[in-house]
Length: 230
Image (cartoon, rainbow, N blue to C red):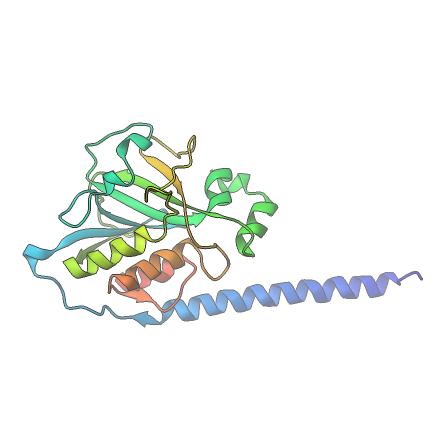
């Protein structure tokens, strides 16, 4: 039976309207929940106890940046400088960013984003990776906020970050060889599944919650984090 063209057009229109409505609801919920603050849960640390950390965004994706070495952990034992092309051990900070493996490895620029990669990322169909980047001391600004963590807060943040790595039998992160964006970064296999409701920025926001810092109730976007630090 031949379906009338008018009926087909009507079906397409309803489908398009439904998709647009779903996107609108998602964006509205993102803004609403991002605006709801989760207050810092611990008292500020004393100056002699403070561990300096940073929240760093590239405009889309948020990293949690911490000292490479402290009394509480030596991250270079888990993510060695030698895993990066430059192997530059003069850098004193390391940033951690979790995300969809396909986005990270196959989409160096937005122009190269494939529909299949986006669909897999949005709908629980892809694996994930941890991106680590070594830094000199970050500079505070619109996209970089300094945190002052107590030993207890930093210990919880360490556990949160470590638990995101997919470890091998020896308890070490599994590097994804042959991939980096520059001279000072590396990728590792990660736990959890990326989706519309648990994005790279949701992960960073949850890390802040774990460390007792200001955060959004829920956010898939970086601005939802930075709202609470301005």
